[in-house]
Amino acid sequence: MTHVDRSILRLFVAAACLAGAAPHAHSDTRAILQARVVAYASASAFAVLDPAEKLKRIKLTGIDAPEKTQRFAPQAQRLASEHLGAGPIAIAVDAIDDDQRIHGRVSVEGRDLGLILLGAGLAWWDPADNARLPAVVSW
Image (cartoon, rainbow, N blue to C red; front, top):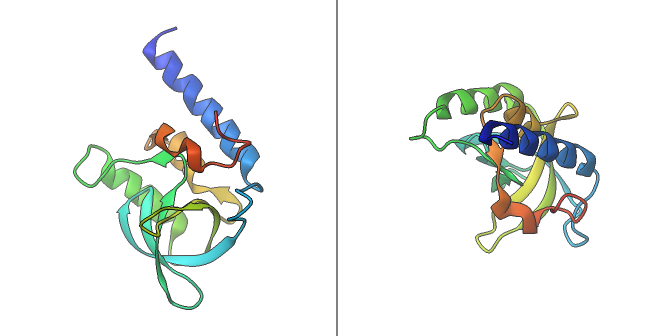
């Protein structure tokens, strides 16, 4: 199996796992947070305001996208902002790290942002997040 074949296989496995895991979360963090995006660090990390107008930092669970200085960062951020827009988003909280950053799966109108970025080839699976994923998704 070539490197490209393995990469494509990982993409499909990650997409299938994330799609199947949408309703599940860790037992202590089953919250769904409604928010709107106010700033981007990257396509997979951004700041939101919750309904009480409190600022929260979000990281897409299991997804990593190019940072601002990396190739394709503008395209990834543009795609994320097109889907996230100024409207409300739903964040299925998987974990909250020591820095109070929320790790979660973001959906807009029923579409998962992580899967959108993966499908466009503008993000990759982040195995460092495996421990934060619901048990049904961890490999």
